[in-house]
Image (cartoon, rainbow, N blue to C red):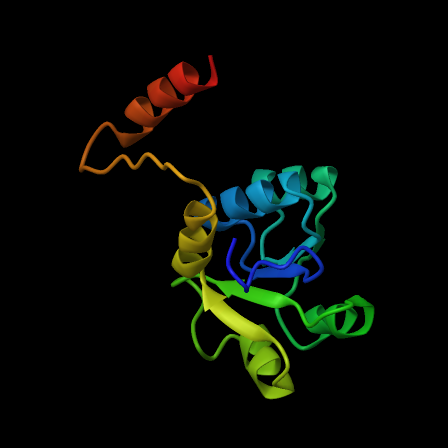
Length: 141
């Protein structure tokens, strides 16, 4: 993994319940990273991540980052997606604090993929989920 993904550095997802964000959070938790996040909805994915050990708040604002700043050995790496607007209260507070690096979800995905010698990508307009499921089944056997 790249320098950004240090196992001592917690990873915080703003909008952790999104499909792409929750999947990345699961991957990092499986690799032993401390994962936290925030979301405005207590969705199935948020509940599943909580059961797996992620610390998630159901608000987005300055209070959501207070625990991050107090409990981490290194400043957390903050992950956002395109769904998080620049005026999001939590993102504004994170940027104002200054010590936390903010990266886009796609950059985190690139870091994870770069840590593997081989990767498989499925692209297209229709059938990606079906094709990905078939490939996952084949590769796991």
